[in-house]
Image (cartoon, rainbow, N blue to C red):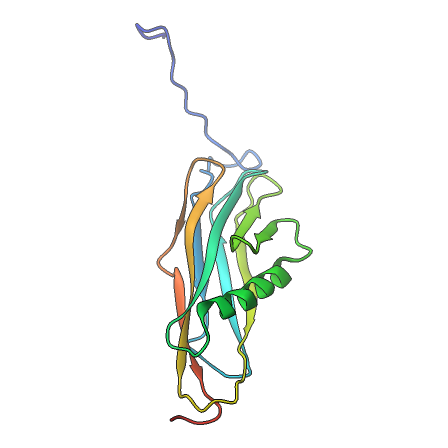
Length: 171
């Protein structure tokens, strides 16, 4: 039946291989990592993405690192983080990384892909010669975006604060 305005509203349900209807997205980004790491070691952070995506749909998130109480600036860690993310995504057709904007993008290759189980990023922690005590840094996700219009969000696990343990001893 056509309404008085002469238009009909239709809802199209997305299906995966003819199965039950599913909704693409929303994309939910998350991050996990260590509460502490020794100087000279590598802190491993895992970025996750959940949702159901259509072929060609892209979702992105900005990664940032902030040095909360270190002798180095956050910019020092940002350079290291950019190199680590670049290495982690290299060779995977679903991932792209723009080091200038610190933006990680995931693009589904086929309908019904369910995001990524975990992209592991190894952030090397420099072992300096200073006796300075513990330092902290935070790796965070922000500015989620999606090309599908269903949206993208950073979940409750949107950042990790890690204490860097000074191997030279506390002050």
